[in-house]
Length: 228
Image 1: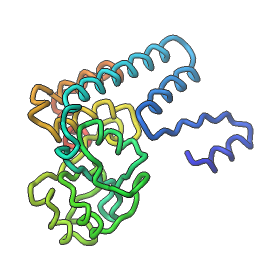
Image 2: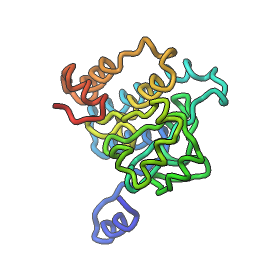
Image 3: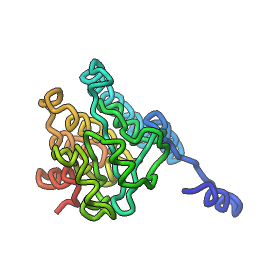
């Protein structure tokens, strides 16, 4: 919700909670605030359980990647849209999970979500890994698709499709708790060879969504496709 919308609702007497955030601590605060607004023991318990789960995920990943020198961390570019070409810079949740997962945001000098850039700029950044949002489209749909084919990430087949479930994992939702481990496994597969993301996803859905996710649906989610 934009500030303009918030003000308009407030002017007609409707209560408004401003829940925007750009990092994981902000997400955790929004969980607590939402539980307080809903009232009752169950929302409070769920918020606490989720925040504790996220903390465990952060520690699990951090313990495995913290010793990697910065120069050895891959440069990752997250593409929110192929046409127009939009990427995510600093001061975003996306920048946060890239760094937590043991990567570097390739979009240096760029701030904010879904910023329009040129293919020439992407070539100048020369990311090691491209992560396409589930609904971003494919690189061959880009206005300057031939330029993007010159990227090292494309030549080395390091173009990934981001998972999406109830909500896209890469953006501002609770499934970012899964995104962190998924991204870390993609960037550092040998360090996370013991991780079964399908099983982790099923456990998460059972615990927080009360939903028995099937094996097939878990795989569809990990492929960034709607469950079949």
